[in-house]
Length: 375
Ligand SMILES: NC(=O)c1ccc[n+]([C@@H]2O[C@H](COP(=O)([O-])OP(=O)(O)OC[C@H]3O[C@@H](n4cnc5c(N)ncnc54)[C@H](O)[C@@H]3O)[C@@H](O)[C@H]2O)c1
Image 1: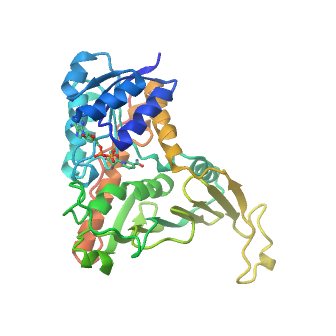
Image 2: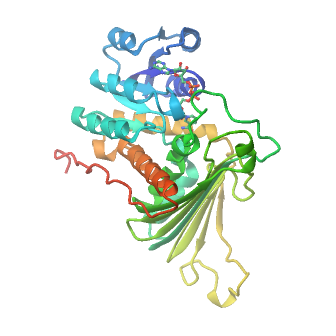
Image 3: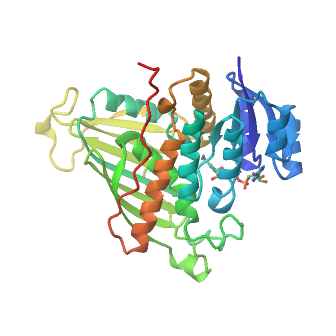
């Protein structure tokens, strides 16, 4: 039986979520809700479902809803996630919330604790690693082909530069928030790094903004250079920027994870994976031929996919699959706890930057509670 889903907040991203649920065999889109009537009506009309303008009314009218999908925005694109997510969980609904889980660390902690208390699934739309290259890269790691992890290099950035800069945003979600980019966006790169390399224990950050932003009185701290140490003691680096320059290597984001037995690179998120076996490993180039400057030949997987939008249906499908299969709560993919981890790292990075680049240890995550009924 498909899961009954209601979507809250149906502008840009919520419309996309509604479409994903409407097209997914594991879901039945039942209702949509937006405080702006026209938006709710348009999406409802498109999918022939009921429109609501307050979440309470949607919950009262559909007591059999299984999932509430929260795609609202708010300050720093996360300021309006807490209330609808908590209201839906109070009503006993599983929740999928957009990223960042919240723009407020205390709210995010409460959301994760409340989902645990109510024994509900709380997932977050950390969609960037629900892709074919990420699945293949994870399989390489799991099969031991990377070996002991040594480094992780991640870069992510919007295409831009001074010529196309349009001046400081006047959107109320952005204007006046220096950490808009940091809070609204770093959930993605941190979630990717953590997916492959595990929890982060130390963070050090330098941040800035280019002169064209300063001249426009744009307070947004848009350039982030972040150095991390993972719990497994390997080292990582993240460079992220919001359209201050155009990145030439690896599309809009790339990641390289190198270990003692091999290295993988994902280029352009959905597009390409390369794997290079370390010299001496089975199938690797002969070490004798590897003079400096002569790179070993990688194995290349080119998916032919360049549409990042396809990460939405695959991530949303994974959430529907996990809820349908009643996976133990601690096995939920891209869980609220995973999203909280990214926000703890984000707040640690902000603290480091504000204090001149000191080393900051992110606050510990709540303990993973295994379900005792699952062997
Ligand atoms: N995962 C991704 O790749 C990705 C990409 C872009 C944006 N996002 C996230 O998606 C979210 C939504 O982004 P957007 O650009 O569509 O935002 P938006 O502000 O354009 O739309 C949000 C909608 O929610 C409605 N809303 C707000 N509070 C509400 C409430 N309490 N009840 C009912 N309706 C409410 C607003 O009226 C609006 O129509 C943000 O959190 C953003 O960070 C995620």
